[in-house]
Length: 372
Image 1 (cartoon, rainbow, N blue to C red):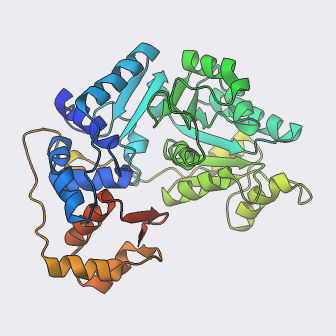
Image 2: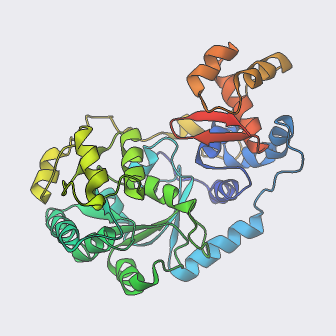
Image 3: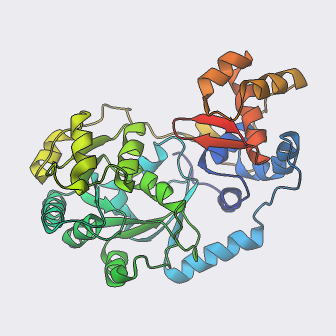
């Protein structure tokens, strides 16, 4: 990733990540647009106003960012900031990468070969045994086993990989235990594995947080193994993220009479390799070609230094109106917006950035956008 970030830029990136209407994609686009986080924070009010914001956008203060860092330090946690040298390489390779993640434990486990094992919370005894046997054998072969610390399959996978190394991605803050029955397991992973969270300390898990957690589970992994997933389940969301990120999706078959196997069986019908053992998983993992998971460089998303500022594209009212005319309440792919507006990609991205900061734009999976 190049030279380490300065502390000024690192703090500014945390502030930017915690500011209103700034998600991972907006964070990435702001760094592209402004060159660095210090300049992006200065530009936020004007960009939001140009996007039609009806009030001032809330920017996380220096005091709030320092408070978060102090809370993490008291927990024995470290903050990993995108663009810094210790940021997990596989997370840096997804588009867009999470701006900041906090970890407790051995973060080196995230740089080893990793496999995610996910599945039903209401798992059968057979499903838990398969997940545990697979996780234990993968750990013995040098893999870090990643999962989401949920009941059922996740718990079985974590427990079996405690001695060899497991990573648990949390939907809430690192200081929040969920589910309560996994309190001891969460503490054991903090001591011998690694806990990972995108959320600030004190954040209780809510439904909207779980897709973000699932995106990190797949982003940290070379492959995602789905064990006992219903047709509508979070595990299939994780599988979808994995496919979008260029990861392998593997599935354990189950009885067609068991609704807990409906999703995993559907994945196999749709072309996911069928796996039953750790040996099957290792054989099925497609080793990425050189550069296939290329880690973005500082030149992709902005400069590390706080005293440089990339030139922003100049937007006239005609270009802004053309982009707005191409948008509507129906989610539209970015490529279609570019074609329909007849405006260059940098200017389209700049207008979308203004709209998102103003709270007028919604992003759907697959880089589809709609007006709110």
